[in-house]
Image (cartoon, rainbow, N blue to C red; front, side, top):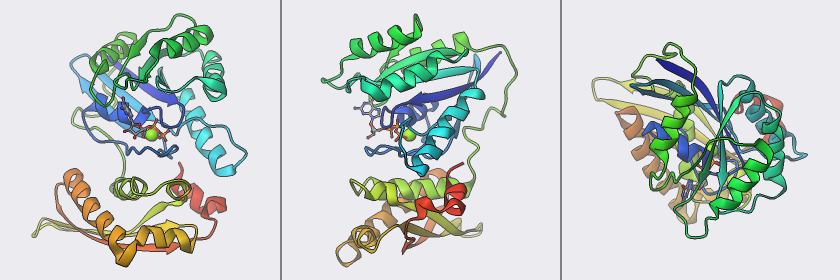
Length: 291
Ligand SMILES: Nc1nc2c(ncn2[C@@H]2O[C@H](COP(=O)(O)OP(=O)(O)OP(=O)(O)O)[C@@H](O)[C@H]2O)c(=O)[nH]1
Ligand SMILES: [Mg+2]
């Protein structure tokens, strides 16, 4: 029986969370086109006949002077210390550049076995050879799999490769577990996903979701959730509320659908948008949501 903790590392938007979901066959981490969607070391568990892989999805590795970004970067770096294997994800549709070099340089200093995934190979603009070359130059001969989280290309091969490098060990979690996120965290993430996939530029980064209440009514098979969508400015609140409340209505409806899929209850969601000026500079808030 094999068992390994696998850190997933790569640039923002490389498709780390999408790959995690594809490998586990479950929606574990939220995804969006805007960078820095993931803000925590989200755990996903894959149990197969070969054993168990415990994935740590991490925030996209991105250097910045901003304290909030530094916090996110630290989560990615810290996860490396806890892992038996590193899954390095490169985006085949982007030129490697400075940011990629920083990640490769960080990885080249690790003693842990690295497996590479060159992702988004379904797209016609993908240039996987360039990503292979950049990785091989810095990391030497590591296994590199061409993948697409969108079509499933290479996913099984990636799983098999990870298992083949995993150490022998017992299951870390019961086999029916596929994540260890708290219901509050999951609910907040699913709502945040619905918001950030409807807004652009600075707005996705300014959003955090707070769950005020979750209550189940077993008799009716209902789950009541009261949540706040926090933003930094009045103008952002206006965007999320939308014309005559049209966007927030959409967010509420689609969140209810997604929450119902995950929790298996009918959902009654009460959503409010709130302004929390400069929350990304407030340690108490940041420490609560980034961990
Ligand atoms: N066409 C295509 N799109 C992909 C693939 N993988 C991810 N995407 C898209 O790329 C975007 C970013 O994906 P995420 O999985 O959120 O990326 P991430 O690396 O987790 O990003 P951060 O959490 O922000 O670091 C989303 O819009 C995904 O739908 C892929 O293999 N093919
Ligand atoms: Mg992510």
